[in-house]
Amino acid sequence: MYQDRNGNLYVRTKGGNYLGVDFDESGRMFLLDKRGNIFYDTGFDQGGVTVMTKDGEVYNMFTDKDGSVAKIRLGNRQDIATIDTPEFGEVTGFVDKKLPEALAKSKEFFEGEVPLPPVDNPPPVIDEGIFFPK
Image (cartoon, rainbow, N blue to C red; front, side, top):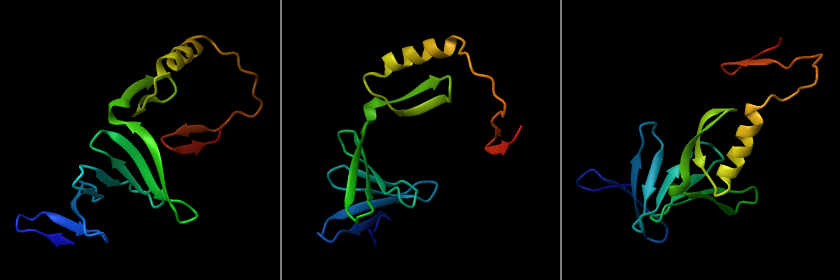
């Protein structure tokens, strides 16, 4: 790692390119290349990095089980939205163009009563991440 006289950190790739380095408040590293791409550590051992291009395209890059680099498109930053769901409350993520139709169907489903079969063995209750059997 290289630090310039202003305190900015850089790393040099095998190809000789320099990437700017910084850390978020959690200590996870992110890199910025001269094309404007941001590489952000996912914080998960096998999660790889999240990459956002200067055009807003967002990808997850990781090493697959064969040792090859896999790249999965997640969406565009303009597609990120927070929606309120009856199942999970507020959820933030990438939405697709068919979401309003799916939400309308979900709303119709959850506003009506759903007949459930009688349960002899009720499932456990989740309370703050802990399972309590009934």
